[in-house]
Length: 143
Ligand SMILES: [Cu+2]
Image 1 (cartoon, rainbow, N blue to C red):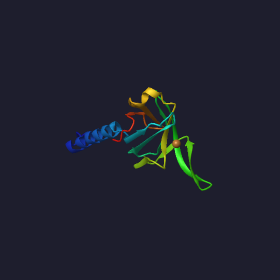
Image 2: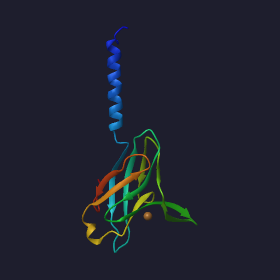
Image 3: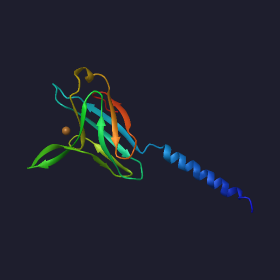
Image 4: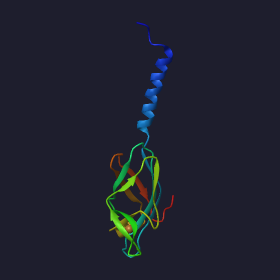
């Protein structure tokens, strides 16, 4: 049997490198996190951008925090009035950015301990497929 030509050995190792870099890349990136705490015990609100860089569909199924209870909310028209509604998940299409913004989809922050207003809020975003993503955001932050 002839030995494997050099060029095809190179090709095999290039493929192996490509596979490594793809699996090491984070499929979902969260950025532009913004948190506005509610005044006088009212719920706070979180906005952000979630980029699904993966090739498959995914969903945000929950956000956990040791400091507060967080719900996924959306806005919709009901009897000609814009109302907020809790939803179970946000659908994240592949290669698409999902935006949480004022007047649209957002995260609602309940039962925030009073003294947590000044310290960063620790968040864990949980997805249907992708591994959980941790983030933190300070009140009034916009970065
Ligand atoms: Cu809301």
